[in-house]
Image (cartoon, rainbow, N blue to C red; front, top):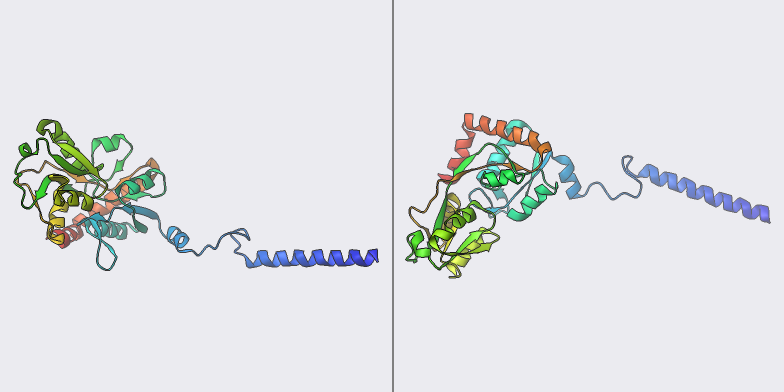
Length: 272
């Protein structure tokens, strides 16, 4: 009886062993048998591209979402043309300005293209920029029916800016001289609404962005004549020295599309 019991135990163990082997053979050979499926959309996207590029798609006409839900704009088209010229692939993700920077700094993304002005303080803090691809000035904008027509009229008033932008830097550089207060916002549309709703008498924004927003959204705002500064170039950015090959490819591709006329066609498409 004991021998018969032993025979059944051994037979059962052999069945379990063979079942385990069969399961391992059925599993992908490059992953543990209990690994998660490898064909999820996120994993496919990350494995199929060379780079993850992040942006902020509320910065028309440089990056925004059209009626079909597609990412479009000057930056979007420039990146596509440069990638095609240089032969690399990428996935473009819209995270918002602050989150996009954080993703790059944390190593979760390879590069940022979002109308980022090349500034020394950013370089000093670890940003690595490409060559400039567009010179943008900043300006002051007020409500369409506002009587404010110069910085002198801002004394004691509240001004709206977008956090961490060249527009915010411009306002801050004028604040002490003209005696106004500053309120910070996370995105441009909310900043515009602060002016339209009377929470601020003016906002500071990149001039081409402001002009496009007023025109396309029919905003009751106006750019104050003569309020523009000298401006600064926009650049593509990475945040780690090991991403330098991506910067090199961007610069080479940018030079090529400028030489072959693609760059001018992209600007004309969005700016006229």
